Image (cartoon, rainbow, N blue to C red):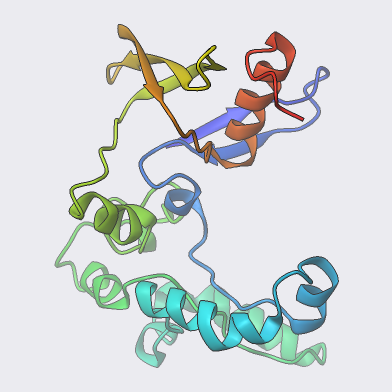
Length: 220
């Protein structure tokens, strides 16, 4: 589920991104801290921080059932690295806090007890965690969207080009691939409204190509 991009001509930067269902949520570290108020105000002052703490953070945290690591897991052999890091930080005079997490810790216990296949405790945290212990978007927001009956997700479909047609609608040219990356078919979809949410790198690739090819003439 990890794709590697080299966005510079001299290959000086590697960007790894999730390309499976759930995008970056599949490969992120499941760390969900709230922003520091001063940092939020400096960079996102169009949204009051009080709105975040009174509405948006609680809404998201409820959806993902965010929690910190329970003591029994923290004191297990699998969190020794955390305990060592904490001890060193305390000796250095740093304040200690636990970062809220997007993991299902009941499933972590099942991993440790041998009840399900090990994944998060086997070093696979940023490789997808296939036993369901990470609360990636395919298990909540995307699943709920599909559940409405108004959303269809097309897996293994790569957007090659987007263009605006003369009548103002949009055409999306797509390559459908199989598990081996072989091309199954070339498809074209049309729509009246187009939202591009392919992550930072994916959206940039699509929009810069459209800008270069002038397929979205109103793209600023």
